[in-house]
Image (cartoon, rainbow, N blue to C red; front, side, top):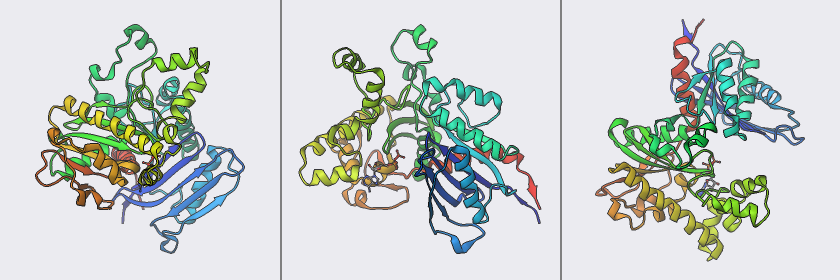
Length: 414
Ligand code: ADP
């Protein structure tokens, strides 16, 4: 009997963490999932959950270890050891490829790409536009290459889905020579999620992606909106970096750029301090001290004015983007909520579309209150535009894109 290499390991490497999932691409089943955090500290922690696989006895039983894990290489070794305990070792001939989330692919990478030296060099060249993310992603790829040099490593870029944006949406209105010299333009992020969710929305509507226009609202701790026309992204709210656009957990989103000059010239802050202020100490946390929407809603319900104002600013920005992208698309078939806030926070969904009947938008209170992990419509049956909740699954999307690319080269095993 012959079987094939059908497993894909998905790695999402941050500066001090690695998140991973092992999937079987015959049916997309998750075999194991986990994360290593605080890499390089004394209190590093590995949390690993086998979900299915040869050893049924361990399935679903979470294992945690707190011990010093010096670097990404040690982290991946530790992950490999945990997987091996479940009979899912990375030396298995069933492993087809490793798929890596890479945040910035610039203009060059509009598709998932098998990594070679030249691809690594290009990801490295993009470090100046993604100083926090690309170095960590590169470390993850190099570490995985060292562990399994024979295996295809595939880079799946957060920016790729947005490379279809027309120039008039992607360009900032600044001096062209300066912009080009420094690769300054709007790239957008969360592309894997926007791609997955817009496709699943077309499925929910029973249509081909080429037939539908969708506004996707990815509302997690980071948040972004995108306008997707016939399956292609035509605008998105994040820009050169993930700072632009919606109000986020800790990021300001849109702001007059002159605020930064003012903070430097008048408040005497350094560029690094301003960077930290706008990326880490702004958004919901800057406005009310909390960035978790559950906590903010609890405070709103208790009558807390700071939490109320933070919520209102968050919603106001969201509504502006819904209006803007309705105009960008002309015809909107669906407005879709996804990620931690979008999937779970009914009050956010309700407030975001309240009173927008002129745009064809409405939410049914009963449907909006339903809790489910499934894609679902929350607008009334007679609504001109479908409002829906579609849970995102970036790992599955990365695994599918990876497998689609290397499927040809998978090797038969005995
Ligand atoms: P990340 O951007 O870190 O991937 P997620 O998509 O997991 O984030 O979203 C995390 C956020 O989702 C939390 O910060 C919290 O604000 C929000 N969230 C999670 N669960 C709920 C819930 N039940 N109700 C409201 N908000 C929630």
